[in-house]
Length: 289
Image (cartoon, rainbow, N blue to C red; front, side, top):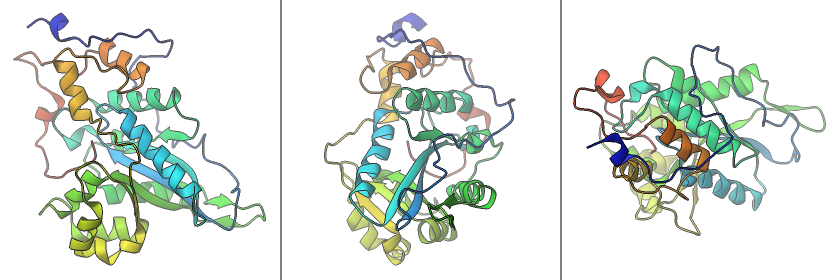
């Protein structure tokens, strides 16, 4: 089959820079959308972190943050400051994983064209070994609170920023898979930080919380948000659509579509080619799509 036969059918002209990233440039933690002063010091400052493959990032990944923002606006406990995408490194070795530079760039293109409060952190993607989610959250705590000193209130007080993992219900369900998540990591993620879970169709999050001992122990640190408009877009389906030459328009931002086409991502590999996921022995774990 020729490459032209399987190319994405949707081609959109965009003025955005579609050149790939290079991790040879020094790492810098993004802070450009992080407020310097809280609006309401009666609330707890909160930052959400979404860990996952993002191969590619979709409108569901973007909607997850918007749904969380709506949720916290209606409540008086937390002030949501910003949100971060943290794409996994190449050593996650999940099926369908393109190089980390591509995935970080696609996330950047997605938020540059759709959001004025979300950021992409490339620290995890740059690592030469797989980083557990608990370690990634520790990284954000170090950057935001240890190095950044938290956030100022209007009265001049410094507050520690609360960090929570933002995830879909399918990721949380993987907590129950034997041998996938270390119990100490689950205690650290859910007990020390906390989780905001977006329910996905077919996932009984409340039932799972009741049945899982560690999650039930830390249930007060788990916030479940229902989708009022169900969105089942998945990266897996996007990759399959591209492979089959089907349109992916209106499933992800236009610059991301252009990037996928320009770099020939997710097309069938030639028989002699070696994909990224075949180069390193694949560890056993599950993460967000």
